[in-house]
Image (cartoon, rainbow, N blue to C red; front, top):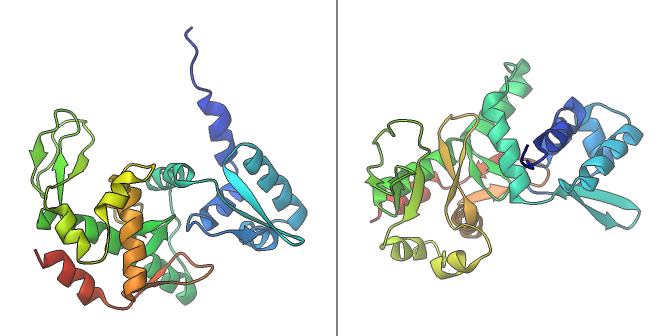
Length: 243
């Protein structure tokens, strides 16, 4: 047989409930101490440390020493993409109790997926950029440009490209498209949103837009939480449609 990537060894790191719970807690891109991750996973601190050391050894997490405290974060967007891709395939128990229902609702409205926006806000932004003509959807094979509501026939995965007018539109929220394109990552990528079952915008542009909205005071990231506070949804919608 020809040499093949050892997918099984990598997948084994995700195939443990405790490790999966800790990695999901880190999906917002922030670093957290072992004690917090142990609490999330429902295991002893010593057990959590063993799991985290294994994940760090596999290159899935990085360790950030802070005095005597060791904080862990995802190793990069590539790990976040794998986690977000697995979520639509996983079963999710229905929330019970007011606290769980409230938290679930907040996650569905707006949350961080590593360094970009997810939830209904994230999918609405991608749809709005398509409506505005800032992004164009292709068929994923031939490069044929599609409309924002066209369905993709067959198994081809749709891809998205920046339109010539993109720079002018994005500059209205202080996003420098030249800098986005110059970064060492794809400018435009998408994730399948696990709560909305639609695409949300990722890549360099997705990260730049989330940071721009934070800087403008339209949204707010809260330490230790994935759900996003949306302060000015009308400003976001106004910008999307001001083309």
